Image (tube, rainbow, N blue to C red; front, side, top):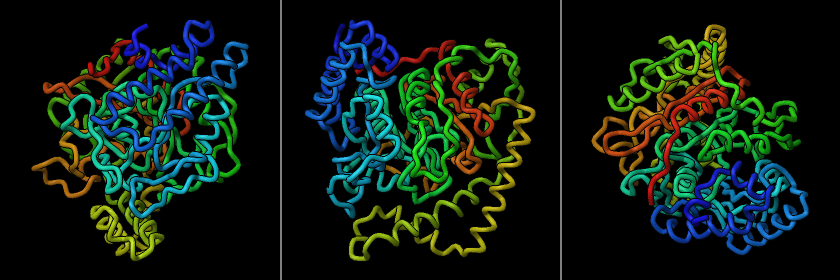
Length: 464
């Protein structure tokens, strides 16, 4: 098998090859590392690569598979960790010059579960400073670029992982989503991103952004997202927000389809403008769900006040985060993050509590909405990827990243599961994402719908 083909294999295909001994974890890991060596200088997806550690883990995995005794469902699969998430022995720099290179003393729950399952950890992927915006560049690691077009951003804050996935630099990628950080880069880089229901994937230490911050997988296929969720959703006592333990394999039933389900299609939310190419592509994708036997109706979800409510949660949290950094280091922080923190610091406790009440009402309204509709379809992003190194599209009226991401953060507020899957290209060859949102805790139906669409409309990776 050619190295390119091996590097772009899905995790489920790799595991099948390990099982029948037609493929070795060492071969899969070398293929991923070769791609990192070739393409990371161009795309800046990884800020840390542990070649020796990855190969040692791959050799251990190979020995287990030869004995027919894998540790778990992702044993031997090349995997990355977002550099906001603790991985024992590796520094967690968070894209910030204010942090140190001291190795983490322990693993975050997601990393611990991956290691327990035998995943081969390649390294850590780039993020904007403290994951604060919807693109990926930072004072520490510079600009991360999109494999479909190096002049464009791969999104953020998980842009390192989206670039890595699209370029074949690992099959599985773990990260966080505090306002779209999984789905924005999935849309911009043409891959699958799944934000699980809040609490589904245990997190520790707690995010500075509290209950708007979720975790989940970013992969090249929906089956891989389900495979990874099986590992990530296992319990951890350190997360007091976590859902009750539910031992579950998320792969069975994934191909059962969505015949008979009732879907709402929202071309936009409120009056948010949508690029005509994106609008046409997402509308065409929504119509294709009728081919899968679903009933699709145009309907507007009750989320018109989302931006102000999100800002009243997120911006004060940024202020608290900045307050933990020594005063003498604050000049090193991304100016945009400092500006958002300053804005958040001006909000009163009364302002925040009022926003909490509106958030609660939004959640209840979406619960009522999903009594009528099993799923909601809408654009992931209102535009394709724009110029790298910019917080907002050039020549737009947008001032902050929250101005151009109106379709992602509402579902952080409501805590619902949401996936982004590729659904087409712009005329300039940039991917477009379709967002699929489910009722709270109904992660399985979101994954099933995403898989049904993926089977109907397979999506390529960039030719590099």
